[in-house]
Length: 189
Image (cartoon, rainbow, N blue to C red; front, side):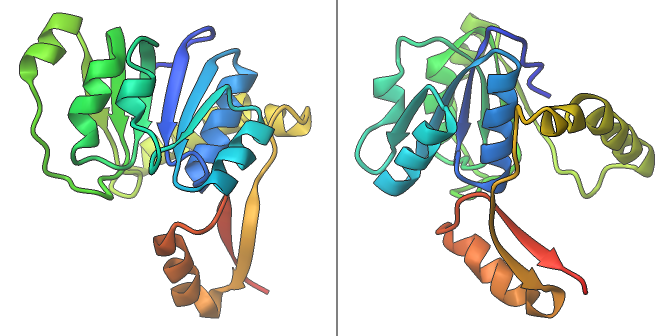
């Protein structure tokens, strides 16, 4: 959705999430400059060790001030709420803002002039309601473009904890706590 290209700048909020850790590694493998926010110093250090170029603790610094001159090309946001206008402000001309969740809030106030003046693109998506044809195409694209990066060790899975399927409720509580770094897996024996 964000049409990220080699050499562009990508910001992923929630960089230590399962999606964040994978997306940031993929962007680095594609030759992009990476930015991320995290909520603890431990998570900031983890992302720096993962190779993320620019990381801040959003509880200590305001990303929209720290990166106001960076001209970010693509932002992947799962926060929403008051992050929306802040994201728009730091996007480069013709920048793209993609939403996959609204953890803070799905209701936002934005200045449409910011979008028009910079010729910005806002988009978002949920995977679940997509058609089987679209999900099949996504799986084929992953097999073609992403799996080879795992095989060549350009990217690696970050697995925080596994739970048996019967403990899915516990896994979900952990995910909601945002204490984890990387993926939480359910296993079926």
